[in-house]
Image 1 (cartoon, helix red, strand yellow):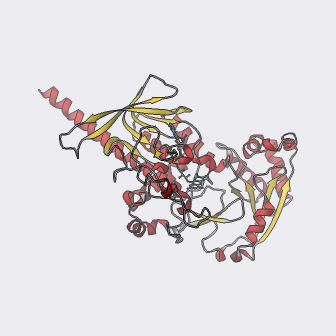
Image 2: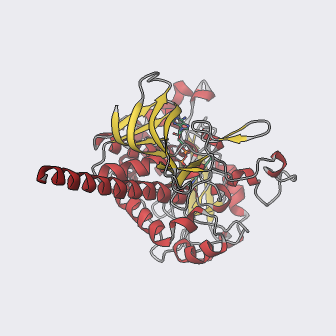
Length: 455
Ligand SMILES: Cc1cc2nc3c(=O)[nH]c(=O)nc-3n(C[C@H](O)[C@H](O)[C@H](O)COP(=O)(O)OP(=O)(O)OC[C@H]3O[C@@H](n4cnc5c(N)ncnc54)[C@H](O)[C@@H]3O)c2cc1C
């Protein structure tokens, strides 16, 4: 099979890159072996909430230039503010066009979203039913919050969230109530608590009668004007329309909070992107695993300009039948998704054996104090790339293999709250570089053909 671009990895970075490539008319394939980090994510887009030294960031876009000077090995420094801003705006427009509008605060500041534990987490873009609290919580306008769960559902505990919310001094005027509701449709699955996960509830709520029963139950515990906080229990494609329907029926203001995995808010983003990719004509190879690549060495007499070229990929499912492309993107994530692996005495990139950016000494991988406020160094480790995010193998650049997302080194997505921001902007950047290169080589080919015809 022959493509313009093959992207390895179906998470935020790979799918953002894939959608941008398709938009530019490239014949694109995505190979994704399993679940991405989106299944564990809040579904809000973190751009930058904290610096590595722990300083809170209030306005991520305005901070990017100073931040890049202070942390020159961070991916944002190589991408530059203009690319990050363009990428995130493009992502917002694209997601809105495919049915998941994402919004930020009008003043460009981060906002707080509520976590299932009743704490506040700073983020940049959120989905329509994720309530955006101001960074200055004293300015919170919500007067009463009702935290509601479904009887037997263990992944959201309103009383625990209530206790934690009460610890936030700026919210001391906020009235907080809790409730647990029982719905007849859930009686059967409640017998086995292991089965009552958000995804099971979402299946039952795809029936209109069950949604109506839920709407009625919510009205027994809350009044218009209250902020009704529910665990995210509405499915992927239709979830937002069901939430709108219940808001219309009840006149209540609803707020979704992400739950323990599976996180439907994160899955909603992944499924929407995958669906759009297939609808636009992309080739999605779900459940296949890239095992190795075949390279050629382009010897340019001058060793500095000699490089590798990746010609084809071999996967578990396709066995001896390779997949070919002009350009490739590696977006296989970090240790979490096995884009990186740690052996007893070394860290490896398992598909191509790419160069790793950090120390090989195991003792440098972690802090001795497990609960230290400083992050463990391995969380910022990744592969070595050029400033343009091309991969490096045995010291040589692979000029048609770009890298994006959590496999990159020099940042800690969780500590900084920069995970989706880096994934989207590096995926977008890889796509833009590929589009430019392919357009260049097409116009070269056209010129050569014209020249041949003229001859
Ligand atoms: C638990 C958790 C929660 C998070 N929550 C948030 C949040 O709320 N907001 C936020 O902004 N960020 C969050 N982040 C960070 C952010 O989600 C990640 O940094 C970002 O999504 C990474 O995307 P990625 O595409 O680089 O990698 P991943 O999402 O890890 O995707 C990698 C993909 O590559 C595939 N893959 C791996 N190896 C192969 C192979 N050999 N062949 C084929 N496919 C392969 C995997 O199956 C997967 O599809 C969270 C991260 C984690 C770990």
